[in-house]
Image (tube, rainbow, N blue to C red; front, side, top):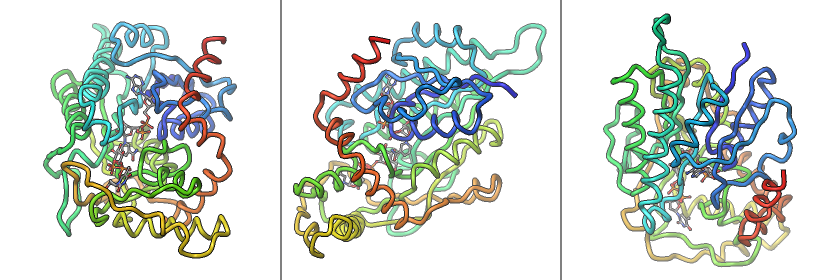
Length: 355
Ligand code: NAD
Ligand code: DAU
């Protein structure tokens, strides 16, 4: 069946992998990538598919309600996959309002546009459309040494980022309960892979190892995250968008917990090997630094529901995924240099203005 799908945040890390998957797997769909191209959005992430006949890019800010309404009227989407967000916890600690604008108000603007477009007309009985909200495990707060987040775990966000994402999840659920909007929500653990902006742990460490810079490990390094290869997250989104129960909520994670310090040491070993440096060279760059305020001790996702109901499971092991990720960064040093130089964004925006 032909469909038009708006994917928000498609120029970002996860969004670009979702856009690529959909553009390639569903040639009969029209994929509209709606992205404001903030510092984190980068059209270079989609160079390989930018000329595909079923792909359209629209530069727009989801905080601008009128712009969002106009695009919904223009494209009449059958579905929305919403990934646009301010996504970095450290930035949320210094600029919390940016997170309220994009993650909360931006999400409500999209919900309003979807509601206006999909609400049953007098001649129809049912809602059209599907609004897939892409969220995070951080809404559940922090775990102690044991246990997992399930879909029933109570929300307990600690950072301005996770509070804004929790708020957006509540709005999505409220639009389903109050108006009947057909929604699904996925809450995923930490992603890693190609095109990850080098402010987050794994790409930052890769960038700093390549450039012989210190590797800043927060606090004692014992904080634990559950890592998932980004393409496996994109596969999960595809499954839930198409087959998830309307109104359903699905946790996504790799059952793959790592203490930060162990992960950084693994990265150092793999990088030494790939860069043909003597073993132990990169690890000498590890520097323990002041902790992140309100740092969540441990995240771990119970992904039983998506696995049992929809047959999803991760396709790569962590070692394989990490090795592929490092290879990508080593082969794309120009990308890394551009995104860290600050002029990259401007360059692509100028290219875009010319079109
Ligand atoms: P990212 O920061 O790499 O990309 C965000 C994208 O959204 C960028 O392309 C940016 O230009 C765009 N954007 C930001 N503000 C916008 C606005 N106001 N209007 C339009 N576009 C805007 O983020 P990511 O890591 O790819 O995360 C994508 C989504 O997945 C987010 O909703 C995030 O909360 C969620 N998530 C991320 C992870 C992770 O590990 N990165 C894990 C679970 C869930
Ligand atoms: O759990 C899902 C979340 O994962 C997503 O919702 C967020 O968008 C994403 O950014 C990520 O949040 P984290 O805060 O877990 O990711 P980050 O890469 O910033 O940090 C991972 C861990 O590494 C965390 O314990 C903090 C630590 N850290 C991070 C950086 C950037 C360091 O020790 N040093 C660093 O320099």
